[in-house]
Amino acid sequence: MKTTIKLLAFAVFALILGSCGKKEDQDFNKSTPEKAATTTLSPTEKGKEIFEGKGTCATCHKPDVKVIGPSLIDISKIYKEKNASIATFLKGDEKPLVDPTQFEVMKANFALTKTFTDEERESLEAYIHSFSK
Ligand code: HEC
Image (cartoon, rainbow, N blue to C red; front, side):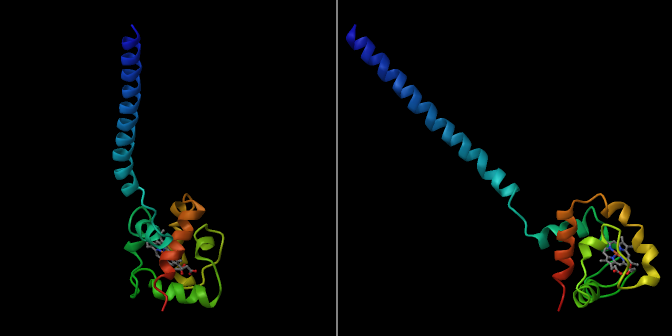
């Protein structure tokens, strides 16, 4: 009888140990790809993603040449000179500083940039300033 209890206790003990080990294994396996997917992007990297993706900004803005909109180098330079905030401009309540004659074209994008979070607008600003010389 005593031996049976001992054996049983041992079996339970082994089971607990075993299942703990398994759980750790599973957690480890699960956390690896998750970590890779949520690797935190820097604001500049996030800004690039939005600029080329859902922001569609890249259609009109290139880093170093004027296309439909001014180049990012020019935008960054002027905003730095005037100590102004691109993130605030993208909220839609600021006057244009770069090319007021073409403001109507840019204004149409506020419908989209107003739906972004402050963090997203700030990452766009970081991305644009990454081209300053
Ligand atoms: C349809 C073309 C077009 C798209 C798309 C576009 N822009 Fe523009 N953008 C312009 C034009 C044209 C100007 C020049 C007018 C002006 O300075 O406001 C401009 C100006 C700007 C300026 C300078 C504003 C100022 O103070 O004069 C910033 C900053 C800017 N765009 C950021 C963005 C960002 C960020 C996006 C994406 C969310 C974007 N633009 C998408 C055409 C566009």
